[in-house]
Image (cartoon, rainbow, N blue to C red; front, side, top):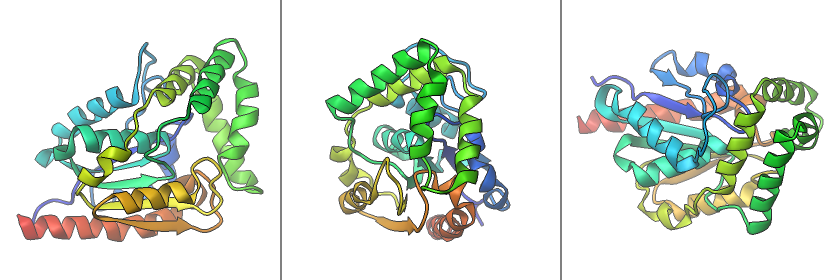
Length: 251
C-alpha cells in the first residue's frame, strides 16, 4: 500500500504558517504535512524581488524532494495564488489541489495600484494603520476571536516582508487560461462571508477546471481554516482519502 500522499499547505497574506495551527494536528495524523512560509513572512527571511511564480518554483523544488515527488497542494488566499501557479508551472508535482478563499483572476489595475500604495505605507512606518483597515475585512463580521488572532499573527510579521508580499500579489499572473489544463482533482473552499474573494470567484474556478468541486463554509469570512478549522478539516480529510485511494489503484 503506497504511503499517504504528502500535503503542502501555503498560507495567506499577511500571515504565516501559524494560520494552519488549527488543522495540522488532525491532518498530520495520517500523512506528512509541510507548511512553508512565503519569503519575508513567518520564519522565512525577506529578500528583494519575491514573486508568486518564484515561490511556486521553490515549493515545486521542495515537493521534488518528498517521497514520490508529488503532493497535494493546498493554499489559502496568497497561498492559493501560489498553488495555482504551481499547478500551471509544475503540474507533475501536484497530485491534487485545495484552493481556499482564492481566485484565478489577476489584480485589476486599480487593485494593483492599491497594493503598491499599501507597500509604500507599510515601508513608511504605517503598518499598524494598514492592518487597521485590512484585518477586519479578513474575517466574518462579529468574529472578534478570529479578528484578534489574525491581528496578532499579522503584527508579528516583518514589515518589509509584508511590503514585498504586497508587490508580489500585485504582479501575479492571470491563471484563468490555465484552469482547463489542471486535470488533477481540486477542492475549492470559500466562506459565505468572504469579502475579499467572494463566492463567484470560487464558482468560476470550479467551472473552469475539469475535476473540481466546491464547498461553502457558512458563516466564515476569508480565513476559513482559522475561523472554522473543524469544518475545514471535515471537508479536506475525505478529499485527501479519495486522492490516496486513486493513487493506490494506480500503483
